[in-house]
Length: 99
Image (cartoon, rainbow, N blue to C red; front, top):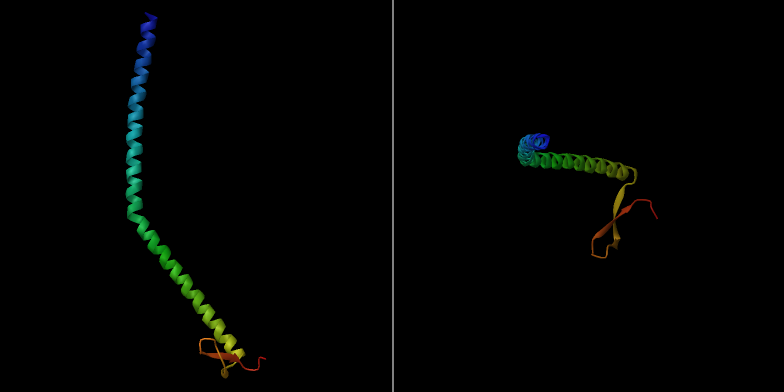
C-alpha cells in the first residue's frame, strides 16, 4: 500500500509542477510579448533621439571648428596667390608672411 501512496504522491507533485510550469511559461510568454511591443514602440524614438543628439554634437563641433579657423585667419591674414595655382587650376590661399 505504501508503494501506491508514494506513486500517488509523486503523481500529485508532478501534476502540481506541470500546472506551475504552465503558469510560469504563460507569464514568460506574456512578458516576452510585452517586451517586443515596447521595443517596437520605443526603439524608433530612441534611434531618432540619438540621431538628433549626434546632429547637435556635430553642429556644435563644426561651429567650434569655424570659430577656431576664423581666429587663425585673424592671426594670419590670407592673400590670393596669383603666381601659384593648385594642380586643378584653383588659386591657392597663401598665409601672408609665411615663406
